[in-house]
Length: 216
Image (cartoon, rainbow, N blue to C red):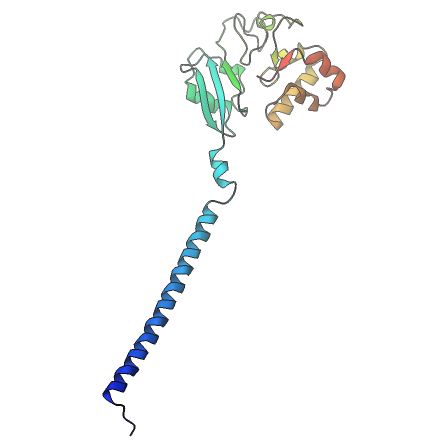
């Protein structure tokens, strides 16, 4: 029977131990690399392009008028007028019926909350005697009249009601209703020129309106 000397046996054991140690070390390195790769992949999935930016999107609006805390507020993109009023704490005398609380807000928008007037119904719907409209309508309209060209008053096409829009030159009840329906469907007008997207308002009619309307 083949037998090894004690010294040879010791050498064989050392070689076997080295082989086992080397194999174990390589396996540990491979396992560590696989774990690190999985961790990187998970982090990449958690911060997919656009997700972080989407969470950080916000708009800045100015709320004033019949509110307790008039000022500038930061809100998540897609917020509504009602969300801005909740931040500013509406006063009891605020005329909320003159505002579209469900209207979407745009960055840089100014929301003016009007005060209720006892004789507002005498002058017709949407008229706020002695005070501004929710979006800064002309003083001539606030007193019950029609806006006079060159008077410096502008009709806010984002918040004006049908009566206010109907008072503009060349805008009848039907066209005023289409202006309101467009903003309710597509969101606020960003620039006055956007009103040309409404069916029935072309370049010529816009020329007669551009100095009388605003979007803030």
